[in-house]
Length: 388
Image 1 (cartoon, rainbow, N blue to C red):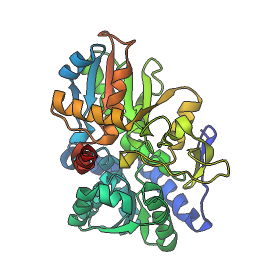
Image 2: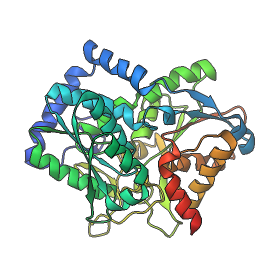
Image 3: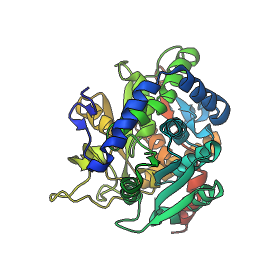
């Protein structure tokens, strides 16, 4: 891989004012990631604050209901704050302290990254500002209250579609203005180098644990790993340690929207190559190069781009990317809740819905779904949808 690139994807397409900050972050990360003191502090927080390792759970009733492969859940939903997002925010907050930057900004769609960022900022005594689209503020009311309860400021974004893309735009504007004292914790494997690598590496703890757990609990590596993909951090984290294990199928699930005639948010399935938020990747754009308005019942998947490493894995055919529609995700949301007593995030429900499409697999196969988050944050959205 060329520096900052995954094949043809990635790079730095940025304002000159951010060059120094990104170079500083890249140099610090490369000199720090294997530092004994840093790793000890990070691992202590993972164990005693985040609650790692997250379990690998055999979903016995789901397995019986599907009637095919054995179904396992990698329980990232049991992490502190209820999702995989805390894996990355803990690591980046520690880097920010080493940079001497006391102010943190972040963008959030579903709110889980905002909560995770506000959480670690409270613990490490860092000032925190979260940008969030007004549309997402309405549908993620509970997470907005959590962020404010943790002492962070929430700034509504009303431009564009008032969703994740627009929140990210405003975060970058803030960072350009305040780059000397501010660290931007990007929440996914998107953005300019080194963010896709940094976020992937901190989330790879899930895949590293899974590899060890699968050998102990299943007796072999899983035959398939399924994870939802918006920007793609939870999927990249669980996929990455298995990339060289070519017998393990990697399946990323994108949001198709309401139905096949809807634009949805499936950047790999329906997008083309372009530049978004500092990186060359697959994006949803018009023939004129304008970013398209996306849609999904899941706020965390409602984004018109994808991490450049996902675009690369698709190009080299190492991972497959499929679409799931809103109603399929809602059906899986209820199925997991009623069969296993686990209420999944709507993002995760997209991955769960793909289990209905595994007709060629049988009981000799083992499939792991990365349970990227729990569904507390989505209950209002589901209730309002059911009233329609």
